Amino acid sequence: MQHLIRTADFTKEEILEVFDDARMFLDMQSNEVLKGKIVVNLFFEDSTRTRSAFEMAAKRLGAQVISLDVGRSSRSKGETIFDTIANINAMQPDAITIRHSECGLPGSLVDHVDCPIINAGDGKHAHPTQALLDFFTIYEHFNGEVEGKKIAIIGDVKSSRVAGSNRRLLSRFGMDVCFVAPDCFKYEDSEFKQYDTLDEIIDEVDVVMSLRTQLERHDEVYFTSLTDYAKNYCITKDTFGDRDILLLHPGPVNRNIDISDEMLVDPRNKILEQVRNGVAVRMAILKKLIK
Image (tube, rainbow, N blue to C red; front, side, top):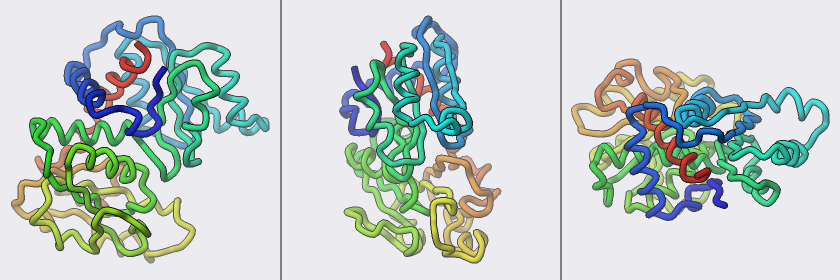
């Protein structure tokens, strides 16, 4: 039995096989590959895109989906996460997706279940399915020629599980990963290059991934307002000019903070393509782990 807690749980060959399946699923046609299977979604944090993408993916494959509002039921009654998992596991689901604010929590549950666990995001640690769909979007755009391509991940990298998963995954496939952020949002210790502004490397990059500023994950107030932050870190037409650069964002986008309105309709922006790819990639992951 295999789980997906971090991108390293899949070999490079397995990732490319997932991409092969995802490519077939891009037509968004329903089939019955997982007919009769049951997928349980446990989201201890609010989510719109990830949760709906997992639900859509499972239903497109013919599986039944049970999404539990555990935040308002089990925890309010004093039940621990291990109690919750034990009870759900006793009902014999075929897979469990889980999002939790505690780093490492999904990985700590794998020895307590008899089905695959898929990490849908844990604290600041990892978000493997998001990284896989991000990489799939890049991989398809460059027709698989990603070796040596350079990506700048800009914004609140210190708080971002998306940045964490992408830096590990993309570098495995030979991409050059760097970060752009104000000092307060930088990694304290990083093997990857970090820059103060995108202007320093804009002429060198092939991909820019903007991130949401996650003020809720910080104990200090670093900016008087998000508008103050946006002065130096919002992606605008002036930022990109006429350069042939791919623009990504894991969502949700803070308009005119992360990315300007005009760049959200720019053809170099592939955010909605990421959303579509996210369903196809998660369909491929569910198929792989359950079948």
